[in-house]
Length: 351
Ligand code: ATP
Ligand code: MG
Ligand code: MG
Image (cartoon, rainbow, N blue to C red; front, side, top):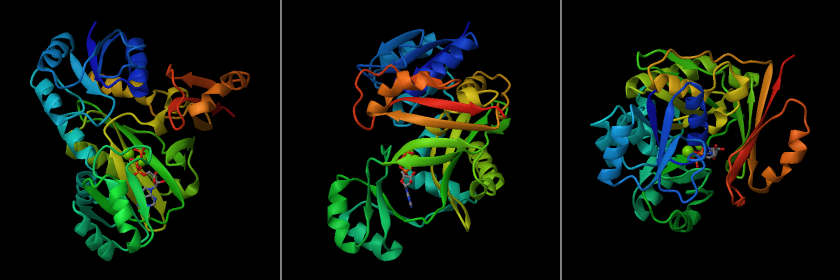
């Protein structure tokens, strides 16, 4: 059998390893984490950072294809690997998606709508950006932000100094505040041969900046944007030469879908696909990177709901298991810190 290398040690890698095993592949996780929940389901594990050439060369020798489960890996190691073994998605997807300015410019060039935004690299540029974009607006670090971390809302120019300090005086973008009715995502997958498939868009609800719930089918306010948003996601995947799952987040507005950000990977808002779609986002990612035909993205029921278990929420497992037909996923993390994603539950309505 073949071996798939996975860079990254979190729950996305864990779920990719499970899907890979079902298709008969071995997986090898490379991650620096002291506690890697991906390593628990992978065939083998190297605990090391991504910068050691020796470790990378060993991984390349062991694997037939390498993928990644998070986008904050330095490009250098990925390019080094790509000289020795196919890395899917490629370095292009990674470098665009890990930079908010580049991803917005890339998507806008392909016809996507974005909030007005400006690059902010100095304290002075923040004042200029506020003058141009206005308030309320959101200052977001260019890189490394997730779950609403590394961003701060600015209601008035008087808050600029504090906001700049709060994000650590790092390169950022200032984004105009979008008035939207709903948030949704397009989870799309592209094969080695260029074949494209995308899932019905989930309605994503957030709590404290973290995804709380995804529901499919989405309400009409989202459904009316499905065709346009999915076509855009397809163009983005093609332009990147992307192979594997690619996720785009959108705001639903009266003017149309407004692109927020992308992830060059499987996504939390696609966890419902494990039981709620004919072929899950994880299996489709594995199929894509291994050159297999893509699977159906059709729903298995009439309505699917995914709820994240954050921090102490996961303590509800006994109560949740008592519910007929519920699908409980716990990620095997030891420490239920507040705000930490510990698991999720999926409910599929069949009638
Ligand atoms: P993720 O965990 O999805 O990667 P993130 O930290 O990268 O999150 P964003 O997705 O950009 O951050 O923003 C988090 C949330 O903040 C969004 O889902 C949305 O609810 C809100 N938000 C972000 N940008 C805007 C905006 N321009 N206007 C209004 N709300 C916004
Ligand atoms: Mg993000
Ligand atoms: Mg987001």
